[in-house]
Image 1: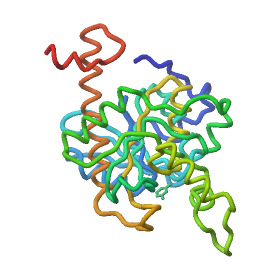
Image 2 (image 1 turned 180 degrees about the horizontal axis):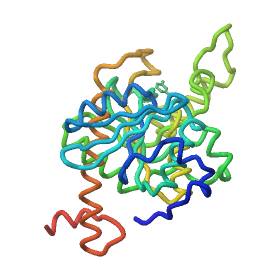
Image 3 (image 1 turned 135 degrees about the horizontal axis):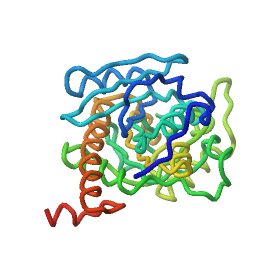
Image 4 (image 1 turned 90 degrees about the vertical axis):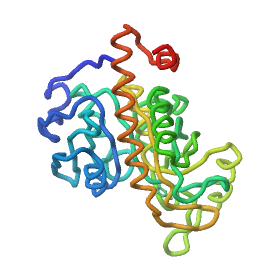
Length: 276
Ligand code: URA
């Protein structure tokens, strides 16, 4: 995949924000800056960690010999916009959000991995880029790589639509401090459930929409740490599993992209592996 590189001036000088470290072409994007340590701990020895202003953190290294990087994006679309914009401008072509999420379907269990291939756009950030009818869709290649990674690792996972909100409390139909409850909150969640939406998060649709506009690939996997039907809220190790799925997906995509180059193809198709 070829992406036009911008100079620092063209990208508003923002690429300085993340230094000149060699990040490679594939970046994992956790929200929580502490997840950088979890990720780097799963990679080959020698991963290098970096701290940036405003609490952004990054790591660069190798996973099973494949170049990999991770940059934390904080909470919500506005925080994700800057690293996505800056690294796309530097020529990075693939971004994988590795997040946490709240399930809204009964058949999804705590600790499961959700791979969102599309998200409902209640994020706010993407609205400032393009009209509401524009879809928030993941790259099919990144989604397939995440599925293959979850299969290989033997983790329980689901693939489907998420809903990205600009608010954790009212936006995700939660009761708020001081007794505030949107009267239509319950109805909104019920509508999403009936439309087979699996989960709530706060970054997915901003990532998918902006990545599509910037001409780069994006995908997302998230571990279920909240269940909106049972009321549970905990991490049973799902965060570490999601980080591993992300790393494995980078390993798989790196291989698929090299197969595409050898064959002179723009897109990966599963029959490449069958005809090996
Ligand atoms: N992240 C969210 O956005 N919502 C949840 O319920 C849990 C994690």
